[in-house]
Amino acid sequence: MATLFTGGAVVTMDPRLGDLARGDVLVTGETIAAVGPDLREHPAAAGATVVDTTGRIVAPGFVDTHRHAWQAQMRRTIPDVLDLGAYVTSTLAEVAPAYTPHDMYVGTRLAALTALDAGITTMLDFSHNSRSAAHSDAAVRALAGTGIRGVHASMGPHFGTWDRQWPADLTRLRAELPDRVSLRLAALATAEIAGPELAYGPELAAVARDLDVEVSVDAVFGVPSSEAVLAWERQGLLGPRLTLIHATGLTPDAWRAIGESGTRISLAPTSDTQLGLETGIPAIDEALAVGVRPGLSIDVEVALASDMFTQMRVLLAVQRMRAVGGSAPRITTRDVLGFATLYGAETAGLGAVTGSLTPGKQADLLVVEAEAVNTMPLNDAVGTLVLGADPRNVSTVLVGGRTVKSEGRLVGVDLGELRREVTASRDAIVSAVAS
Image (tube, rainbow, N blue to C red):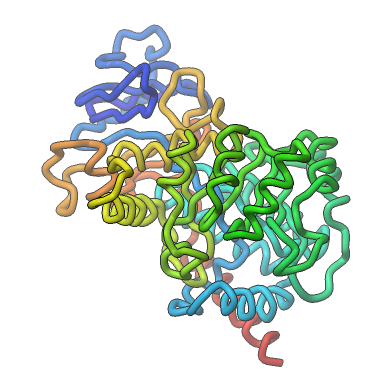
């Protein structure tokens, strides 16, 4: 079955294809078959469903490279949290131990549906509340059920009792992965917060190597993490199959090691600035200076916004503010859109699969209204995506050729039932914490 999106502005994020002020995108099955100015006579377009995208923008789906999805029913419970310590104490030490496998399912499903609604077609779920095999299974089942391209990055919890099944349980998880869900090992940079069991090093690196999975490391901050990075360099543990999250306040020598090894970076612009993580400044200039183009991420919805538009704008504003009178060149709207799509996919280990409207890649795309009151008139498609649009303008979303949002509504989602399930889970968790 084929679908032809025709007549709209096309932002491919593929440097070989460029953008089209008016063009077509042809989807056949799960993949992008062609992109061009007029594909009506393309052989694969015969009998295709035609979608008129006049007055709209067709673009790659966004890629969220790090979100703690299980927390979603507790979103904005600590909107004015003072710092990382307060978040750790409230959410990880007090709330996380109260989660049942059902709560893991509800939170992860809500986060994934929210992502899809906002045009995020790939989400790396840094699932660091894996208290049992059932908790992990619930998180994976939630990702698969929404239709998002999910990456389940599994890690044991920071605090409280748990089954100690991690990381051994990763072998079973990898063997049972559903379609469109992949697996990563998740860890922390150092033993400062939760002890050595969760800290990345030779032992966990060996687990990932034996399973042939990539690794995401969270809480990469300051001098202790810089020392860890240099230790990993000596141990041969850096490289493009490793993603470091945040990377704020690292030393120049640590950045040298990251750049020389091709290690990936996931930035969390609103998290760094609002929670004041280490320097409080997203490490975009440091990453670019060593040749790393990072991905972007949402991080914790308990205190932060849920969409990629916000991440792009915060990063753009902060970097350009710092560039005034400084030595770093100013980044552009196309740069941050690339971080949210193409380079985000590479950071998540899915660069060959998604992140651009490249023929042969999976058809993960979104259609954005460009004639709404907040986006009209369409003068610059990239500028509109980064500076003008927001989730309400995302009218259509496809993941692997499957439509998951159409005419502004999530497909097959009963919002009333979702609301009841989310509220009941939230109330049960609050009651358990209070008891």
